[in-house]
Image (tube, helix red, strand yellow):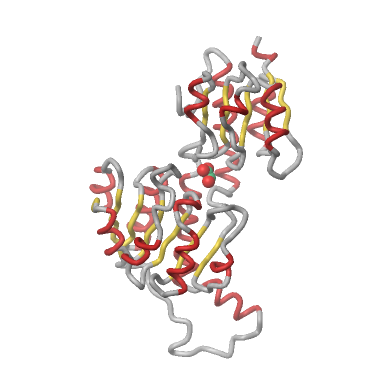
Length: 323
Ligand code: GLV
């Protein structure tokens, strides 16, 4: 019976996940390595029992209505803001995601930006490549150290906690955090202190964002928040772009209200606010937080297993958000 299930994958993913699915199902992988159009996705949903999506594929009630027999949308990401989970639940469609396996990669991405900013890597690289280096100088290209500085973690879930761990254990940073609940483990392990949001803005030397994008977190950082931060503080975003009001960030940097920003995600990807591109105290990566061979092949495995576990009796999915 399960052999008959048809699976659609919207974009090439690592082979290990595809091979897992092919052992059980008829699998169609869209070959183009570019975002699928809404029309094409709608057509695919109408003809398949499960769809493996990536984070730029928007799935809503109207698309789901193309196929009353759709069983699962398995998202190749931990974040699921691209999927209307309520609409899925109302229609009996499961939603899978890929937590845990990308935690290390994304937390390491935070440090790529922290060091990029504090060691002025982008500026330095450009100086070297353009032949502008005229020799060592006592006051030349000074940055700041991480040791002893305070890192504010916004959202002490899996990735936020791992970034905090790396900061405390690896680089001797002090940790403060905000979280809707609390994280006692983090407090014991890292002497981390839970603080109110405004206190974090005022106290942190570095702020790293680790909350999901929701109605409440959209533009969580805007003019007022940047004004409350230290002028010497840096902000890092490896979560979702719209959590930061990008124009407000560009203005805050222009007005020297904060010292710099490290961004892996953008408000209107793949577009980038032109103001940010001009700043040499901004490091940018193209949403590659989870882009390691280790994380991506593990994500393929989890995304595949979420489908297998949903469609085959006796198999268990890894992570279904609306079980
Ligand atoms: C990446 O941004 C993810 O949510 O997995």
